Image (cartoon, rainbow over all chains, first blue to last red):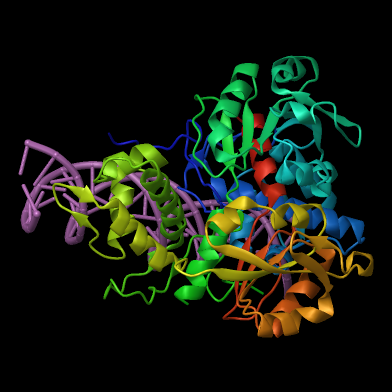
Length: 246
Length: 246
DNA sequence: ATGTGTGAAACTGTTCACAGCA
DNA sequence: TGCTGTGAACAGTTTCACACAT
């Protein structure tokens, strides 16, 4: 049987990508429902991923009170992407720049925030409070960007009730109710590979629509549920390949 | 100034970052110097990343004593990549399959091991023993695939001497000597963004040729040094985008 | 004079479909 | 017959280069 697309979601999957990205089986996305653009082109996945980087650079620039305006050339220097790429990426979503001038840092930042959907906090459930899960609980960059781990769950009964900061580890059985009552819409899978599919099934049943999977296995989700994957082994093995066949 | 490639290495970068990307600014790679192939095509980065997945699937199949031989269709089911992709990916490196039959699990596994350069253990230096770094110290999948964290370093003097398993956290000043004397050839950056470039510079000076960067910033390395990046913020913001513009 | 936005070209990766070998 | 390996078609992404707005 030939599977034309993988099980990431109804579209394609990176894995890294990573990726990993790529990394990805590159695939385009439906046009976003944002105010700016009455455009209808399909947005390349890599464009969206680069948007995150642009946004972070803008935040840094604003924090350092750096010079306005920002040209695509300057952004190229700051990100390593080409200036043409910067302009093309942004132009997918609207005409944010002024010809002969550049982009307004504050304005562009605001636009990217809306495009990326990070103009409001996201509440996240974390499942699997092992080594990696614990690290994620205190990962500062999540909170800095408006992502809040609002619940921590684990199948291991000996961990239940244990507190990390203001979070208390709860049994898996509580996930569904928590999602409903605590406005949780994303989830992170940080369990061993052999438990990942089971955990994902529970998440999907609970109504989670976006899942970030750290387990080194492919998991299946129904259409309409989005799945991203971070696979550390792929990253390090890719380095191994580069070093071996340099 | 227009930068045609980013600062990942002399070729391109995912970033998956991920890679995004990976994920990536897709770019091809020089052909690997492996025994099998007298081929000379450029190998797509995503092909190499998929190789890791194939390899893991093969390990699992062998462990469960699963049926020989393995067809590209079966591999497609197990990985989510298309059968054509599987065949094309493997064919870059040699003729591993038998027509009308499929691939020998043990043989293919061995070949992939050689291609990926994981036929021998890699010794890795970890810099930054914070939350993420600590989690990586006990990340089982690294050791399972033959990657050994052989040294842990941190700039924080209060952490020096602390032990994690058999590892003792050492000051940054010891990195260079450790790399030379302890056969370390890869390094992981798990420090905050503002320290990342400094740490990378030290690694490069010490002779490290492959770096996995978890800090959410672009860092520069000279040509000949390979750099991969895992950016959790990009991953989760990509999910946010998908959920917002579904 | 400067830097954006964008057609068009170039490039890279994926899919199709089938010849050919076991 | 079954399944690989691959040329050729296709699709998606990046780069070029320049018209146009400021």
